[in-house]
Each structure stands twice: as C-alpha cells, then as structure tokens.
Length: 382
Image 1 (cartoon, rainbow, N blue to C red):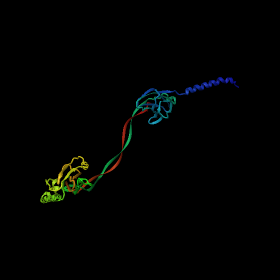
Image 2 (image 1 turned 135 degrees about the vertical axis):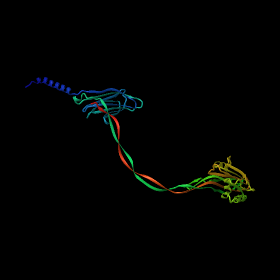
Image 3 (image 1 turned 60 degrees about the horizontal axis):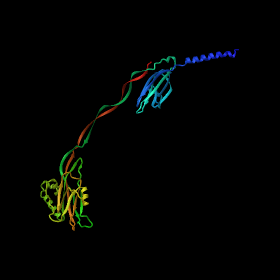
Image 4 (image 1 turned 60 degrees about the vertical axis):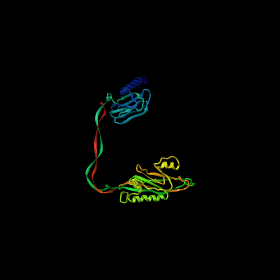
C-alpha cells in the first residue's frame, strides 16, 4: 500500500500536464482590423472581411466622444443580418459564429445632419482549427451579371374591322337681321306734389341674350327706344308706322320704326308736338339707383320734352333702365315707352354624311425580356 504522502507529487504532476494540454489546445485570437473611422454627417462607412467556417468573430466599437451612432450592423453577405444595434455609442466583444466560409459586412451609419462621428473599431477572429489559423480575411471584388426579367406586353396586328357611321355636317344656309320687341308699355308718372307716390320711376329693360346652337346663332347688334307723353303719343307713333308702310316694297318693310332706326334706314322719328313734358334718361343699374335717390348720376342718353328717341349700336348691355321724372306739380302724366333690338342671325343645315372608319384589330401578347446588369460582388481571397 502506498503512503498517502507519496501520492501528492504524482497528483501535482498530473495537474500540470492537464493545464499544459489545455493551453496547447486553446486557439489564438487573431486581429482582423484595428482602426479608427471617421463617419461623416448623413454618411455611412462599410467594411468587408472574409471569415473561415467555424470562426468566432469578436466585434467591438466605441465612439471616441461617447456620442451615439445611428446604426451599427454586421451582415453575412448577401443581406443576412447577424447583429444590429441602433443609437449606440459602443459595442464590446460581440461574438458571432461563422457557420460557413463567406464575406461579412460591417456597417456604420450616421444620420445626424450636422456632425460626423469618430469611431474606434476592433474586429478579431478565433479560428476553429489549426488549418484555418492562417485564413486570408481580405476581400476581392469579382465582376458578375445580375439577371432580372421584365414582362412586356406587345400588340400584334390580327386584321382590320371596317364600320360605317353617320356624322353631322353643318353647312351655312342663310343670314339675316331679326328685330325683337323688347318693351312696349305706357307708364304713369305722378305729380311732384303727390303725397302717396314718387314723381320719379325707372323701367328695367332686359335685352335678349346672344344664343348659339348648331342650327342657329343670334348676335345682338343694337337697340333703340322711343318715348311719347299723353294721348298725342299714340298719334305720333301711328305716323311712324305709316312712314314705314310707305316703303313696303323696300328693305325697311322688314322692320318696325325702331328697327329701321337701329338698322340705319330711318334717321328721324315723329314725337308728340304738344302736351306735357317729361324728363327721361337711359342709365345702367348703378346710376338708376342714384337717380331714384335724387343723387348725382351719369346718363348714357337723356332729354326733356313731349317725347324723344335714341339708339345704341356699340357694346350693347344686357340690362339697362329708362328713368322718367315729372316736374308738373299738379298733374300726373302717362308716358309711352317702346324698345326694340336688332340681331344678326345665321342659320345652318345638317347635311349628314357617311363616314368609313377602319379600325385595326389587335391582340395582346406577354413577353418576358431579360435585363442583364453588370455588378461587382465581394468574395473571400481564398
């Protein structure tokens, strides 16, 4: 039987051998990159390194002033994110296991608008076996081609279809002048001393608007008015109608006395020779309001007497007012007011025609077209 004190040196020897064997089995820590990067404002820096299968990557970084970096990421190329951190000022000894030989991408993103970042970066590897200890971590760039497919539609002519349609074809037929009676009324204007009614009044005159259709257009060219006071007004107007009738064989027969005045075929019209006076004026809407308020106004035309007339051919308005005033203190008066307008009228007729329309008959086909784009990709140096 061994003495227990004799076993002590043997145990110590075995322990030393075990520690020696463990130290021999431990793989070296190899530095891949130990550098300082300046990442500009709104900028990004990217590092590429190759690693062998079974490697353990140890990744550390710190911002020199302790300021945050927007994003730090480690990716297995292409696009397999193995680690990512956001708004961080440092990462210490982040371990990443390499399952197969390949390229790893280290991204440092700074989205700050004004200031860059200075970062200290340390990338190390622990090889899995002695055979991969000397693995070359440099990356080479290889030219390649990326092929994608674009689906396009093409139209193929299959034939023609012929159809016949009826279409409108408006042609000029004739033109003429047309007279329109706009206003024909006898208006009572009260005495100046009337207790219940005003001795001023305004009559609204609305001219016919221009119209346009495919078959007919009408454009107003001018208008005229005639005023007469009392029973004598009827006699004076009869004289005007008789005067027009005496030209029954001429162009003037197409018009009333006012129509002839607008058309320039009549230069003078009869008005009452005796009777009461009336003050009259032709106004726009604004000045008609001033007239009724007994304020200063600007007339388009005016006069005073037993009657009067006038015409307008330049820029006829759509609405105007004939305003009347009786300066008789005791007696009301009856005033006959007549208005007529002249328009140029053009007529057209529809001479329909047959139209032949030839339409191509198409068929749509879908074709895949390859798009080849030259690219460079990172690969390991060995």
